[in-house]
Length: 116
Image 1 (spheres, rainbow, N blue to C red):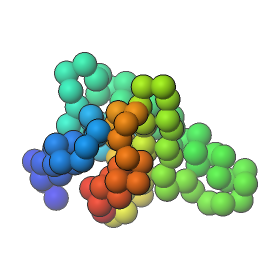
Image 2: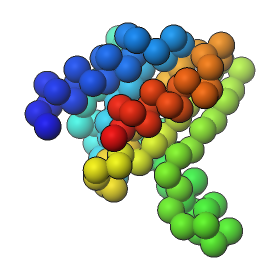
Image 3: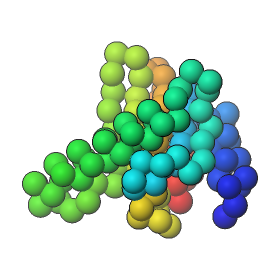
């Protein structure tokens, strides 16, 4: 899949899913591969936070003998941060930022479709 295809997939996710504000594909090393981020979101920061969330999730699951984390979901007073492992590439993560009012079920469904 080309960079343009990946970017279009992320733009479709942010444009068609209510409450989704930003999305980025990030390498395991924390490098942004493709993104649909608003101007006020720093791509580097989104990548670092996505990597950190994935690392913490995986560490917690390993401590509980549950394997690698496939999804990490964090809710704050201002919204959601979701990190998913891309199905086709274990070294790629999808980082999604959404508004607090976003439906978490729809958010996870559409994010998983985008990550596949």
